[in-house]
Image 1 (tube, helix red, strand yellow):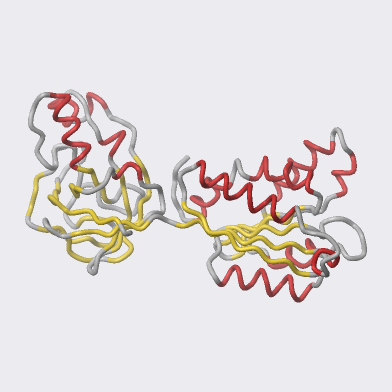
Image 2 (tube, helix red, strand yellow; image 1 turned 90 degrees about the horizontal axis):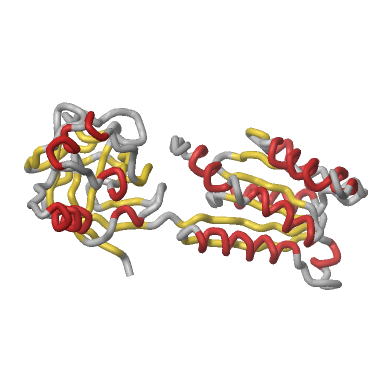
Length: 311
């Protein structure tokens, strides 16, 4: 069931750090709200705040809070906006917004809002978005909320597993680790699994298909050693638009210090289009070790690719 939110007010101000005033409608351009001080080619070109957050603060402050007093461009009703995530979307027939940031640093006494009210809810519960589709927004309009689904493709290379001699365990470990990670981070995820033989053309085809289908992450397992059938890095590395050597170098050194055999792995990582690709070894133990390190970086990497400055 889709979530809809109602627009209760649209608001603008000519100066930053000041209270915004409600107006009949706003025009969203590719840099935010036309005529608003916060518009510009940055993460916070457009701000939204839920009436649920405003009303909670008003009760705590024991005074009425008008729409725009927290400098939000759009005041809404229907969901707690700060429960959304970067890259989620809000849209209707006229406009489309993509969430870029949840909350912000409070400017404290340098901010008129803080001076007049004594506190501010925006730093914790306001959200910011960029405009993907330009158009008009006015009081009474509705947005549909669409959470971003993180898409992961898993490709296992193994002649014997493909022939049914044994079951693939490594690919399934990656699948479970990825699912658990996004579940624990409150993200929706979609995972697609493919088992192929150690074949160059099938590997290329599987990766190209995943890239063309807009998968955010592609994991391969198997074929990273130095045996005659270990082809994965040789096939995948030339496909990279950008290589990311640091993560694999770290893993080799970290585990190779105690188990020198780990240094023989030729695992690689890189970017093809907007898809992050990680080529892992085939052993279950190695897969878990690699995932321990890779999962620490995936969310930040995803934001970097989509030009979100969330350091």
